[in-house]
Length: 149
Image 1 (cartoon, rainbow, N blue to C red):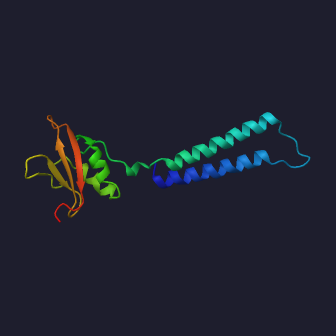
Image 2 (cartoon, rainbow, N blue to C red; image 1 turned 180 degrees about the vertical axis):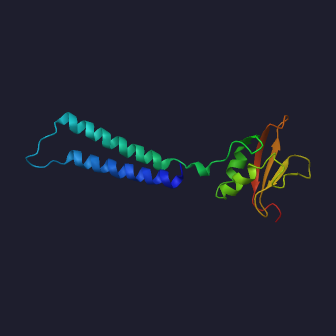
Image 3 (cartoon, rainbow, N blue to C red; image 1 turned 120 degrees about the horizontal axis):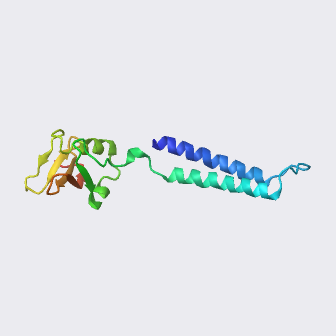
């Protein structure tokens, strides 16, 4: 589900929950249809809507996450350093680049020192990674947005 849809659904649930809560505590003079147990049940329902809406507002959408497999079915293991280095950068471009790991696309190059590989994200940006011994897992080590500057 897209982040926008999650936010919209969360806002609707919070508003609906607040309306239910307010209506369960207000009474119209002369109208005593609901007994106390029904008011309590409606209040719990309102609280559940509010809490559910807040939880939806706090979730991240699927687009902000890293892909777990490349197109060549290489497992990806992001390191903590990599996770920190991609913050506030374009995750769509980074995901597009890491999906190409192991496919021969995307200018995958061996680093000059011999320790690891890099793949092009943008004109100057690179994802630095290395393979495990069996080449079935790529360990994402770092994102460098200005690799050649």
